[in-house]
Length: 179
Image (tube, rainbow, N blue to C red; front, top):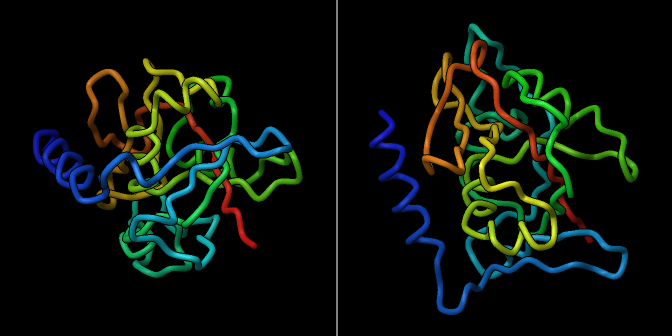
């Protein structure tokens, strides 16, 4: 399974790569770290911030469910990356709650989808410079693999999906930037 996820990550990275990195990391005048993905296939429909999935059942496959495959089809056009990971590793469900409940700078935070987390990994060196993206941490995505697993990305092994209820990883929260 891990090999198939590595292949999926490579294929995804190849599909979104364009000459000279069309997607970019910018720091705005307020010091916010923004990933601009507007030059690759993206959505302008704000992502849900919650899931109806649990540790023992998969969530619905709708746009209203952050952990769904349909929510993972496209990245949001521009999103802010929080400058810090969670202070400790969390279970998947606790990582979802952590980001949702985070009130920093007015709230609105969520866990990134699998594609958004993959994009963050591709831009990891820019995020390391601008947002303290720790290269040796594993991070949860909101996207479920199935009822028992959710996608996480290990910056060490460059792949992975883990048991939602028994593995821990860090949360790096993001929030949609809407006009």
